[in-house]
Length: 231
Figure (cartoon, helix red, strand yellow):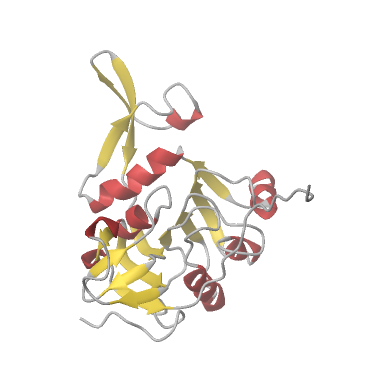
């Protein structure tokens, strides 16, 4: 099966449509598929729902799609580093569904494992349970959470091993669970290496989950830089 594409715009271009649901890997600015995010921005796809731990920062990562008003709804755990995210949410321009971080990762992972939903105690008695079905077991209350099923997953594993096995950043980076919950998964990798070159324990994502890929250079940004004067 042909999986390798020549450029970031080419890999997802026939998959994009207005109103689609995208699951994105990464954590903060670490392990994010910025080349694919930029391709979506250039394609101009509108009214997006995106499930991701956060929404990047104002000028990088998913934040660039906020800037162009291409995102209608976010399913996230954290919004603290993005002023535009906060502004759009407070003004009512952006819909937001908060998920506890572990719950969001499990909602993605569950779909890839063939699990339609699961019960969790996280969020019971808080706004997280509003509008959700509650379950009781052994006298304890749980919130029923459904698995996330995305039209498209965009992820950034570290290395591809030919022919079909992947090395990817482990959770909480979100790339492995995000990759498994999309109907189609497009990955951007930093390196393609021969079989046998990696320790088997470094293989986090079977290649069967990945349908298309590109190899590309990535910008390595720091989210917070803290320095002190020399002694």
